[in-house]
Image (cartoon, rainbow, N blue to C red; front, side):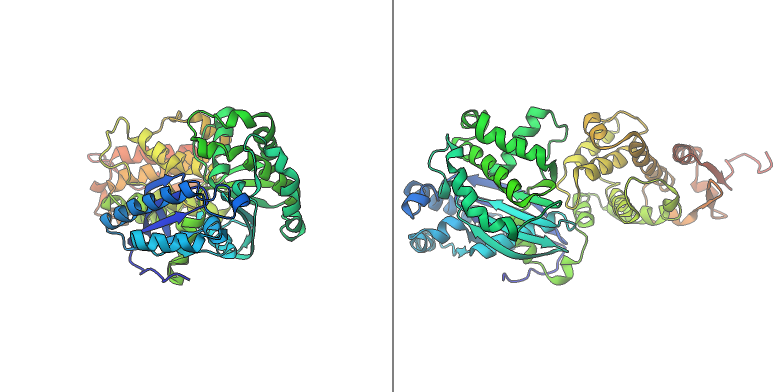
Length: 508
């Protein structure tokens, strides 16, 4: 196990991942339990190419990897990272000259490599999925260049991980003929059929080849949300994608625009393995995870105390870190709105709705410094695509729409296609109601911590009540009242208040 990181709020940690196909360096900022990549560079070195035939590392890949590692070390040192984790996976683990490669890297670069066992590789990949969304439950499948790892996850824990020699470099002779490997794939998955049966549950796919296939699928189908983390497909649709990739489009994928040759040659085979996994394990839903081994290593480095924190809330706090006023105001706004929150309609169950509403309040200040005419649009896009853990695509659209509603009353958003794809009309209305409530509170308090204490919200008999503390009536104006009336109108309620405009007699 890696040494636990300190509990300081923000740390910068680097991970160098020496895989069978790629060598990658990612620098992360860790805020609480949230991990945000701030630098990402990879080289498709093909270290495990031909390992299935030769049993050794690919010579050109070795030279390319050593050169890349020297650069990555220099980058890591220049960035002043708190910690650097360096691991190697299946190719180095299985190759007869793997130990020699580890020694060469140590001699030439000074980097000490930790070679993961197959069980460790599965375990850390599973932890990455869990940190991406704590609710994850089912089976994680991580496809690398030389191996496939399977492991069960449930209740934020991973167990029973195994590795299979089913990476494209270990099982595939000709990238243009992936179907020739089908009998071998089925044979090697035979033991997994009963052991990892996830009938009716979820199968989480980790690995660059699968993410690429999902990206191509979304581009072809016109899916309106350009993000892969937590993208879901029904098993039938995923099977159709896998068959398309491994049969009809196999030759086309080898020359797909915008994809390097070294990545493209793994795609048809990745489609075949997807089909055979679904056939063997019988999941109801397939979920693509951008969070895997590297994020799992980071999660494992955290203390038990930090792991208890809520990733979404830490991620939102990190996103809002540049605006101290917003960070201070958001929690107070959430507490102030709690008095009427149970009476405002929501899209999800109470616990999840509360989690998302708090996240929205945490982000209420991220528009600072943006031009007022464009602030709502820019905040909407930022939230829609921000690296926020613990969100499926529907929740992401809902959260973005709440933030949009906190800045504007317009119905049209910069990405109506994504909003309408994931949210029904009544759900869009619910998001706008909370957004309008946040907007009203922001206007009343001038986004200033401490002002809300002079105002009290309550709910009674279909009406929202706003009571101004006696002697502080001057803190409220008609604009604030109009904002609150907008929210209550959206929710189907009336507004009652003891506020009286300046120069107006209470008896008027």
